[in-house]
Structures are given as C-alpha cells and as structure tokens.
Image 1 (cartoon, rainbow, N blue to C red):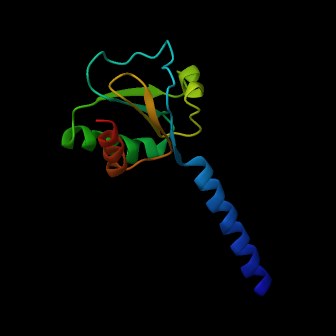
Image 2: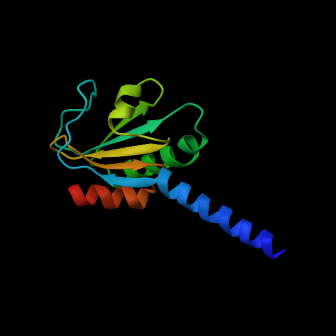
Amino acid sequence: MFERIIILGFVLTLLTILVKKISYTKIILNKNLPDNLDIPDSELPTVLYFWTEQCVQCKSSQKPALQRLQRNRGRFNLVDINAFEKEDIVSSFKIRTVPSTVIISRDKKPVFVNNGFRSEKELIEQLNKIS
C-alpha cells in the first residue's frame, strides 16, 4: 500500500510538471511579426487566437472567454487563426498547444504568448498592461 502511494505521488508530480510546461505565458520583447500575418491597421492592441476544428476547449472555453472579453472590455482587435492552416505563424510564436493566444501591442509588437487556455480575467490583465 505504501508503495502505491509513493508511485501515485510520483505520477502526480510528473503530471504537474508537464502541465506547467505546456500551459504558460511567455513575455516577448522586440520581436517582429511574421510578414504573412494580416492584422488590422488601427490604434488598438490585437489578440491572436489560435484554434483547430478538433479542439474542444477552443470551442467550449477559450472562444466564449474571448467573446465575453470583446463585449465587456472591447477596444481590441481579435484575429482567429486556424493552427493547421497557418503552421508558419504557429511556429514563429512557438505555439505548442491550442487554444493559445498572443497579445500584440498597438505598435504591432508581440508582447505575451499564452500557450493553453487563458481566462477572460488573465487576458484583461495582459491587455491593461500594454494599454
């Protein structure tokens, strides 16, 4: 019985490490946008939203959070990117999972790369930091 508890603890520790490696926020400074990325010309920050058709969390969690964010906060551009169709853009931001988001400042510089789901609250905090 004691051995099973030790093994379970080890497995849970490994899972925690894996989740932290996959779901993280990276802060980027002074990186240019890929040439083939079309974002609206405006004085607003932009959120790039990476998704796929097969991603359940994209449809059930991230997209609704972004829609609420647009209704409640507004004042930003939202660009949806199918990760399978734009693999070059995915690799340029080192996107490892979907859903993922990238926050781009008004001067068209990527600032935050969020691998994995981010809540409306987390995205508001990031947008407020660059506004």
